[in-house]
Amino acid sequence: MARVVRRSHPKRRGMELLRDQRTSWPVDGPQWIMERIRTEPDMQYLQRVARFKEKLAVLVHVVGGQPGRAPELLSLQHVNTETNQRRNVFIKDGMVTLVSAYHKGFYASNDVKVVSRYIPREVGELIIWYLWLVLPFAQQLEVWYQRRLDESSIPHRYPQHRPFPTGIHSAVRSPPVSTAPSGPPPASTAPSGPPPASTSPSIWGPDPGTQRAWTSERFREVLKRETKMRLHYAVNIQAYREIAIGISWW
Image 1: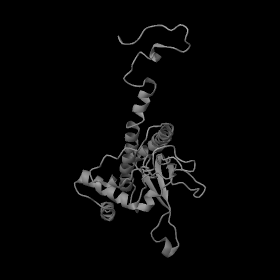
Image 2: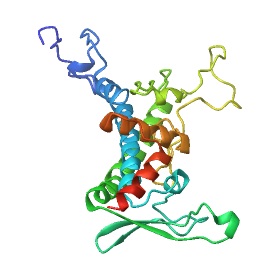
Image 3: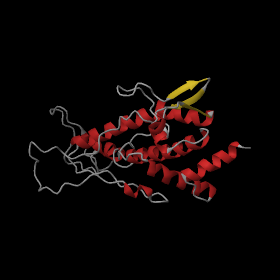
Image 4: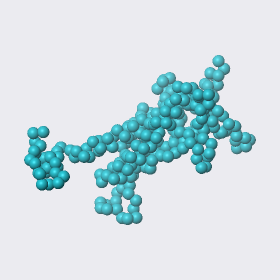
C-alpha cells in the first residue's frame, strides 16, 4: 500500500487511485479473479459431474432389479421430446421409477415389453438431486464458460483430463488446435472454440465440457473399474447378470 500513489486529480472525471499510471499493480484487478475462476475450477467441476454419472450408472444397474443391457440404461430420458414424448423417469409411491421399453427380442417377436424398475430411495434421491440441482448448473456453467472463452482474446483450449486409474478417459480428444497463420481469420471461417453445451434429454447424455458420448463399451469399462475398486475383482455385464440371478434365488 505504501507504493500506491495518493496524489489527487480533482479535475479529471473518473480518475481514482487504482487508475493512476504511476501505480503499478502485479495483476489486472478487474479481470484477475474472473480469469482464475474460469480456467481450472469450472472444468474440474464438470469432470466431477462426469465421474458422478459413471458411478450413478453402476448404482442404477446394480440396485434396479434384474439388470438390463447397456443400451436400455443409456437411453433413459428424463424429459419428453418431440421425437419421444414418453420420458422414462417417474415417481410412484415415493420411489423413483425407471420405465423402459427396450427388449432384446423385439426384432424377432415384434413385441415390446415395458419394464419398470423401482430404485431404492437412497439411489433415487441421487437421481432427483442430479436432475434438479446438478444438471441445470452444469449446463449453465458450460454455456458461461464457452461464452467467456468466445469473448476472450487469449487463445484457449480445454484442459486435459486427469487420468483415471484404468485410463479409460484417455480416449477423450481435445479440440483441434488451428494451424492457420496468425492474423484475423477470414469472414467465412468460424472461430474455434469449445464444444457446444449439452442439451441431451438422456440422463446419461454427453459429458458436459468434453461432450464425450456414453456408449456400451464405456459403461462396461466403468462397471469393471468400480467393481475392481470395491470388490477387488473386475465384474463385467454378463457376469453380473448371472450373479444377480443367483442373488434372486436367496
